[in-house]
Length: 186
Image 1 (cartoon, rainbow, N blue to C red):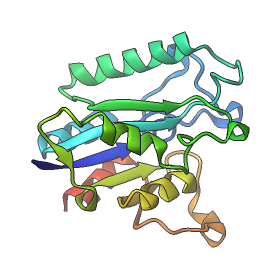
Image 2 (image 1 turned 45 degrees about the horizontal axis):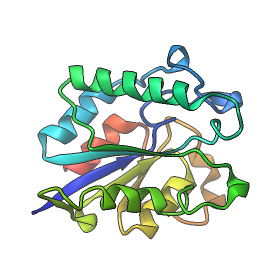
Image 3 (image 1 turned 90 degrees about the horizontal axis):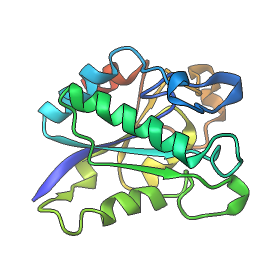
C-alpha cells in the first residue's frame, strides 16, 4: 500500500530556531513553536506518516552529547504521543559538514534511511504525493532531490527577503507549520 508522508526538519519548524548559538543543547532549551501539535495531529488524522529529518552536528562538535539529543527526542515524542501524534521515524545526521557524509542535508541519506526502515512494513511512501517542510534552502534541496514537494517555512532560519540568493525555489512558502499543513490539505 502506498501512503503519503511529510518529512519535517526540526529546529525552526517544530521548535523555535535556536538563534545565534544555532543549537538546542538540552530539553530545557527546547520550545515548541505555536500550533505545532495541532498541525501534526491534522496531518496524522488525514492519513500522513510523519518523519523528522534533521542535521544535529552539535553532537560531533562536542557542543552537546548524544545522550542530550536522545533526551530531547524522547521528550518531544512523548509530547506528540500525548496529543495523539504518531511519528514514524526520527533521523539525525550528527556529522559536521567537513565529514562529507551521505546523510547531512542537502544530501538525501536521511530520507533514504527513512525509506529503508519501511522495508518490513505493510506500506511504502508515495514520494510524488509527499512533502518536505523545512526552514532552510538545504531542506528544500533535500526534498527536491528526493522527489518530494517542498514547503519553506519562515518560522526559523530563512527569510523571504533572501529569495534572490536561493539556488533553488521551494514549491510553496508559508509563515509556519500550521499554514504549511493547510496548504498540504487543500
